Length: 283
Image (tube, rainbow, N blue to C red; front, side, top):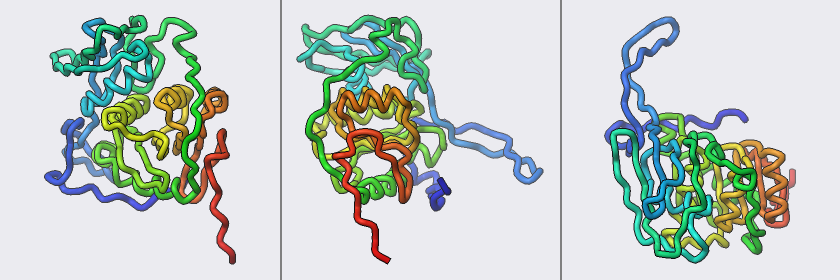
């Protein structure tokens, strides 16, 4: 894809730089070296627990962590059906951050992850095959959108990623309505974490998932489809390619999967009945 117009970086005092750290660097341009500084995306170990029972350690950007806890608990099946989250305790330690989900008595963690999860990995700590490839219930209903909605969402998303503008190192997951107007964006060094943060924020805000679609700035791996289906999101739009397993899972879960979403084009891999094609302009 040809690069879009450059988005100017706002002055330092006008940017929310949570989740980023300033570091001194040696910058070399056209053979000339000079000392400068860069803003780098933070990446820290985040332990997720339910009522004190540790489940997993994920590498994540330390912002919007309550949203992450909500989304991660739902997408990974940490709570029994019908269990309610009462509170989330966020505690910072020298080694990292702990998120303890406080839930009612019916809550239970579904096993453990003995290994840490990397920021780019959604299954690094899974021990069993059935934990890796989970089959969410089919997603029924959902909106019908057109090409213009996808285009509009892509255009709006470029300017709604402050962390990426600062560091160039994070993914974003966004929620758009049926017209493609983005209302919610979450960022993280991990694409799975960004989507968990988005779905967690949507759950906390009681967003109607039947009235819009999700857009992610990453490839569409099967984990991304699984998390979308678990959140009952009917349409997932990704700017990069899907995997074969992601397409297979999207079809079985009745999720509309759109990949290679770029200005002027996209590819529908499953659930095409939810994407209405705009009539081409007559010449």
